[in-house]
Image (cartoon, rainbow, N blue to C red; front, side):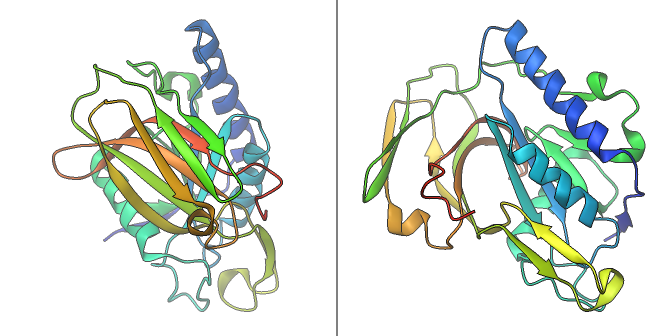
Length: 253
């Protein structure tokens, strides 16, 4: 496995440009924009803390799903990230293979499952952005005191391996780092994934799923539903729909 650090660049401008261009694409197509930002990061990565703060900025924009995946392969660098998750590393390895990359790196931003952003390779942001060939799948969410019901409309044009993924996060926090490359610094954690579940596969039929609140609030943070395509080798591909399952009153972050 080859691991690379991402040099510090103007990540703030990257995130802003990504969000503006995705919104413009969606408005031109007459639909709500699909904006899913996945940040692969680690408290043990010397160049990641600024990107963590930028994810917080992205998460504040209405309609944007922002998820931090704390990988575990940096834990040997003098600091073990308490938010690190083997499933985060596995998801990044899947994207590495899907994108045909030679290795993994942090911080890495993946947009809508189809674009990998490295700051040093982002001079032409607009040209690198994905243009979905299908309309994002609308997801209805009915919030009740004890459960959340998810609804999907029938979509006869959906083919391939489509999976409904549930991402559970821990409450947002500011953490002090006492070892490793970031020793003496504070880390802002936003929508840090604690668990990734595959609820079921979807073939485009009308569907309703009821999830107990005790289940989706198990880690105390927010929760998100992703509809994602996987290829024949099980690698993650395009995200076709996404939504937040908890309202702000019930999200601990």
